[in-house]
Image (cartoon, rainbow, N blue to C red):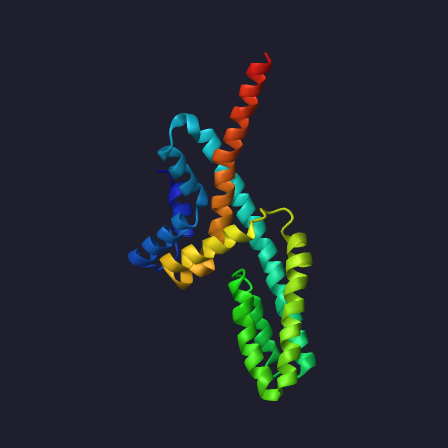
Length: 216
């Protein structure tokens, strides 16, 4: 080993770090490398299937990144709209309600309903009429998100059928509880793209090749 290599390793290594700290940092650095897991999955697959599997993994990763980016935008807009609405209606803690609505919006279908419960309870302490207006505000905001905002921010990502998303939520919550509810949508995005690339597209290619052979 050359002196230059030794000096570079010494500079890159934190001074005074214990072996356990260095080992932990190495494990974390390896865990944050998705290409490492991608190569491992490809090695487990048959050689003939590796190109198709690699394309499916790349497509699912791209769809997941687009979905997460669009979801962050939707969560931010939803939280701002809820906070402003609660402030205009005179509901206590509008900033907190907007934050809760934005965070829970990450979970489709279930999150918006859960976010509306504390807002309705706080609004009812003001007056029943305020609670009714809060319910109307949440319904309008969800309509805006579902029919305008989500199609705009998720136009480059995959569009999940509502029935598939509901099934993913029920199955994940039954198997894994709260973590399953939180991770149901992103896992459904990945699996949906993987199935489309590995099986649906493969069947379409086979049909095209058979039709071409019959035409000849």
